[in-house]
Length: 448
Image 1: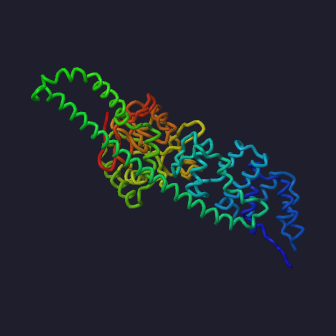
Image 2 (image 1 turned 180 degrees about the horizontal axis):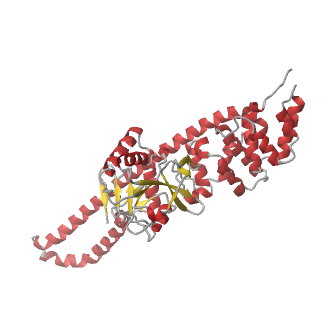
Image 3 (image 1 turned 90 degrees about the vertical axis):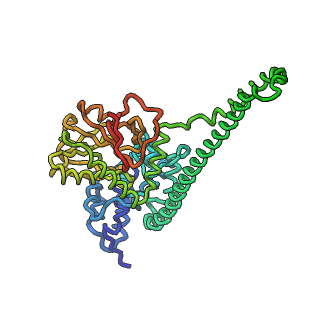
């Protein structure tokens, strides 16, 4: 039987070898042994397999693999690498904490499903940075190894079955994703019902107290009151204790629900993700219309965040295009974030600018002209929700709080929100940006 394989026949496996070698998940000896087996089995082996079997070091192996056309990450190879990571950790060949460095290479925002991306973001160190995730998940009880076990069917030796395993896993994640979304909708519905219940209870208690108060006020005018004063004198102490006891029972009903950033963050991220395409487009047009009324006469440079469209963030490309057409004299700059130092740089939107999507799914400059922060006159702020005092809830790590603190005095800070404000945010602190204004589809809120 004639067997003349080509390197391109093994694109997925070679991709796994390439990244596996870099992340120390695959041994060079294993790759060499695999190439030796091809050489022995092939009728007329291609030179690639000979060279691979004779490679003296890891760098040479990687160099040979990189020369094969079509090598690159996709859903199958990303999941296969997670499966290999799981087996290596289970066999104690790889430390789990070090193994999570693999996520840096997987381009998980592009190669995996929404729910996989969300799990990875929230289960690794990246969760500490509060990177915006596609789906808000309650995974406090979930273990990273438990998550990786979902990929355990992937092994190097069964690479011919990877396609079939991948199709099965895709269906499982789709089912899980639908369940998570359904759970959050049910949770949101239950919270609304509980709010209504609390309000009804408050109203009922208030009516009871008003009735009691009315009786006490009317008592002196009731016939025979003087004859019953001795009885009232005997009962006032138990009545007082009864009212105190009743007060303790109803006090929780009058306590305000927590209004922390974390709760608002989760609630409004979910609401924004649930926007339909039609509603999302309509809200963006309304925000653009509101922005067009802003006085830009003293503005020479605007810092404009770039949207993660998949997260239904306000589409600032519309604002950018309008500025280019109607205010070409205003320089627009875009941010590039450093998740290690939590700092940001601003790049001019000019001919030298080159934008790519980062591994976190964020469009960012990768080349261009850096603009000094003191040249910026207006900063357009991303947020999930804001309050009536002018404070915002962002994704949680404080990139813009730090950045705005570096801006020159007089710089305007303006938020964009699809939703009208909540009354207040409880855990605002001295480092939070106090916005000058916030643009919603309905109006512009101004504070100073």
